Amino acid sequence: MADESTPTALWVERTGTRRYTGMSSRGAEVLIGSESVDGVFTPGELLKIALAACTGMSSDLPLSRRLGDNFDSKVTVSGSADRENERYPELREVLAVDLSELDPDAQQRLLTVVERAIDKVCTVGRTLKAGAEVSLEIDVDG
Image: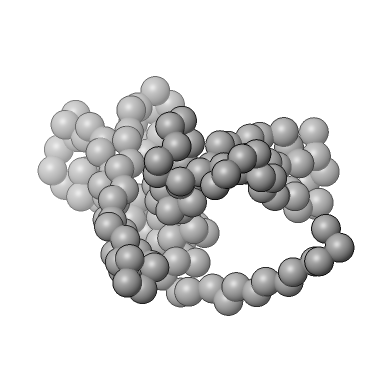
C-alpha cells in the first residue's frame, strides 16, 4: 500500500494508434482511445466519469448516514463537445437515489446536506467550476 503522504503517480503509455493505457502507482489501469476504438474511454468520457464519480463519492457519506450503507445511487453525466472550440461548454449531472421512504421535509433536508457536501468536497467539480491552470513540459529525451 502506498504511503498516504506520497501522491499517486499517474501517467499514460501509448499502446497503438490513438490508444493509450492510463496507469497509477497504485496498480490501476484504464484503457483510453478515440471513439472509433471499442473497449476504451475517450479522454472526454473520462473527464465526465471523474465528475460523476466525485459527485457520487461526495454524496455517499451524508446519504449513507440517513439511508444506511446499502442504498443504491447512480450518477449520470452528459454534455456535448463544442468541436469548434474543443471544449465541453456544459456538463449535466443527475444523481438518482430513492428517497421514497422519507417524508418530503426529510427529503428536502437530506438533499440540502447532499448538495452542500458535493459543493464542499467534490474536487473535480470544484476544479471544473473554478478553472485550472494547465502547464505542459515536453521532454525530448524521452
